[in-house]
Amino acid sequence: DLKAHLSLNAASTHKLIQKFYAKKIQQQTANECSKYGAVTIKVFYDNQVKRLHVEILNAVNLIALDSNGTSDPFVELTLEPKHIFPLVESKTTQRKDNDLNPLFDEVFEFRYIES
Image (cartoon, rainbow, N blue to C red; front, side, top):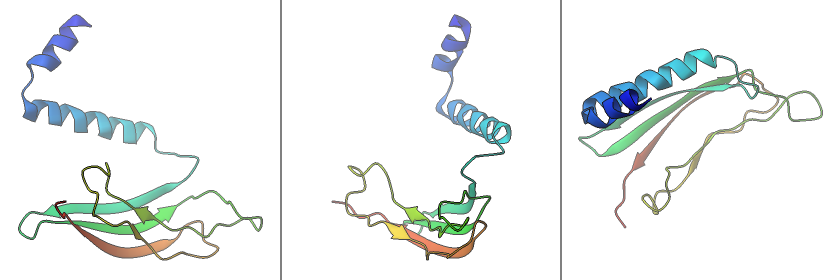
């Protein structure tokens, strides 16, 4: 344990970032199934225009929350933590009525506003 702890403390920032993403990928492959379903998104930051580009593609295997055995899902996007992004407003996709595998195919952009 001590050897692992010391190797993390001695690692460069680049190496720590690599380890972080490797662990996240490992967690995702281990947890393929979620009891709540899954949402597919694509995200990138355009440094030239200083905007975060978010595409909400679809959701699959959502749980039924309505009495008729379906749900009316939507996705709400917020930038966290709020103390860093206090002026950035939340965005919401359209609601998809009676759909446990909705296709959203919506694009949002967030621009950082300094407070």
